Length: 132
Image (cartoon, rainbow, N blue to C red):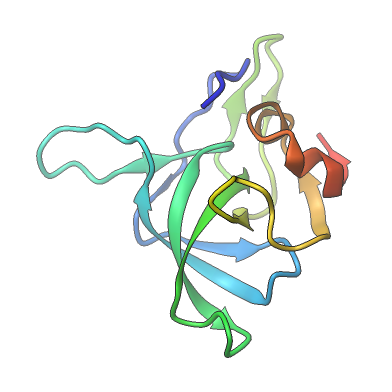
């Protein structure tokens, strides 16, 4: 994965619930695991904006419900610091479901998308309505 410019505070962990911000059919996601996380024994994996996670679909269309998908986190409530000193936080925790090539499954993203997520996954920027 490409490095990002901000020092993202990890505000989410496994078992956290996320809103699905695209039109892939999923509504609420639950984080199962964090891709690339290396921690110590019994430490829960944590994640933040622009990280890739494996999620279970809790609520959504029957076709995608109770399936495991990869997702990219685009918003988090916990504030994090950018390189220019600005602190950013959002109103909710949200993610976008992606495929194996890390391209979004849906074609519309509802709400703002963090700039760090688009730095790491440029295909999200093509369907994002607002970039903050």
